[in-house]
Length: 271
Image (cartoon, rainbow, N blue to C red):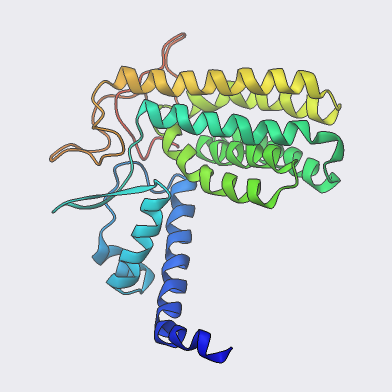
């Protein structure tokens, strides 16, 4: 049987490179999920290579992995950029969210206690961040809250899918210029959903989750439409266009009642 595997020896050198590239991809994905790499950010090979002390070959393999995960795009003669999502992307993401999170709600009665505790723990982190006025951290905690809701299913595959989806969701959040305007009302709804789950009210939790995700999707898609100057699906900004083009309310400031401006990305506005 040894001869069957002899040809693998020629690929031995690829293992170390692939492992390094995977670690780099995980680091970059985490920074996207945490909101530190905003949509449209150019990922300079030189700057990242210096920061992470890795080779360009390793970076390029990491970029390929992130492109497969729909997190970056390569623009010919311009470089690699964090993706800017389009409304169709958001609709697709929220369709998947509903399926994954609903699986968690429906598995509530058989969920391990620590899985349900993770839902409450993420909510507590969001509430603590709200008290500090840190809306970027509220957004991160919101992601973990819904990751924990899906996690009630106790499925490793669902956990893995949600972990990857978190970074795409953060890119979607970035379409709304004010992080507070996006997250404050949905934090209240997370509190409602957590209460329903802890009370074992599965039917009501299903209704609440469905409405929640429908409304969240609509807010983001509306913000994209109001921005009205997005590039094509998944594209980097055009030449001379910065990710922060357009006007926005101040950091952490909610827009006027009934209005969610959507004109541009502001990496520094508290997301």
